[in-house]
Image 1 (cartoon, rainbow, N blue to C red):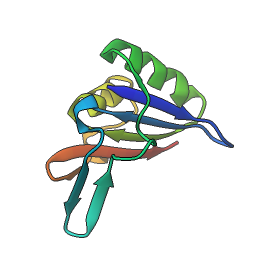
Image 2 (image 1 turned 90 degrees about the horizontal axis):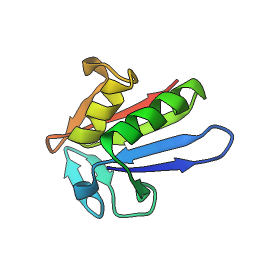
Image 3 (image 1 turned 180 degrees about the vertical axis):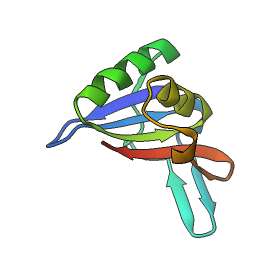
Length: 98
């Protein structure tokens, strides 16, 4: 998994399964475009991602989570529930604003 922190007024945290980077997915007028630099972050382990997500949750960050493994990490960090997960081309994703 890749994680990237975009620092501004509020930190935006992106987490994406490594195998999805560089791809674009479209379905029914919706699009997940993972070709740019927005999701290209540092490769981290599942455990490291969960810990970073927990820390950033305390900082009221905004989160963009894409991919099965990344969604599982967000669930483990208590960021999302099953109801907060959407799918596009069978790829789970979540947008979280605390």
